Image 1: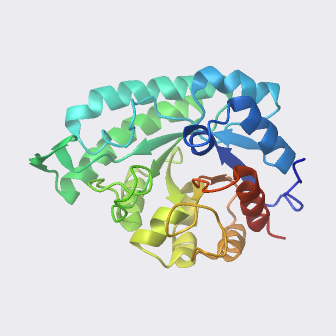
Image 2: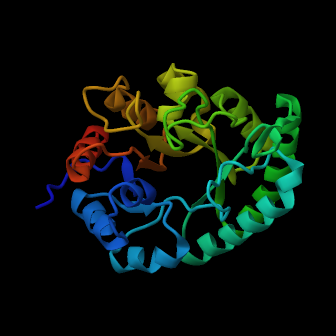
Length: 280
């Protein structure tokens, strides 16, 4: 029996599909049922063909994929070589999100190499990458605005090399200040920062100060324990209740997506994480 973990509901919480599907082979109905029973309002990063299951369970999807083939963070807005593909696929994802009522679509800077798969192909400078990103995101922001959807650009860490989903060596947007500056240059209410607490902690730290600094451009939040991108338990270093309080104090109204990789019974970890982030 699933114990309801949400008592206060001041933080709107979401479970993340891939974390439970990839390693634990939970199907969409099991994930949705668990989310509902825990008191969460959303399951995110669900493939569009599975969205009807969300509606069946009375759930929202807080964040949609960008339509790029896996891994979706390799080719991004920083590289003109991929702009046609990224813009076309992301606009299609925006259309799908708008039709289904999904408020946000994820976006990535992409890797820093001119050929995203070849480190020997030469690097895109930070300044060039930022300029290219602003250009692409400005176009996507205009398109998203017409559909009442928001693009959320994510920072990812480049330090952890132990697992393809725990760290992303080569990703250009590994500094949250750099990614936030790109979002600010775009200057659109429909282009926001995806503030992943796990990645920010690894690369920058000082998480609460940065929540306060960037609260007006944060469109979505992700969680995970550090080190390891695992449960939000007492073996990791991030003080999640304090960060949730900081988000509320800053006026954050969006979703918090639980995006950790369970190492043991997923239900126990999810119950603990959701309860921990459900601050009074």
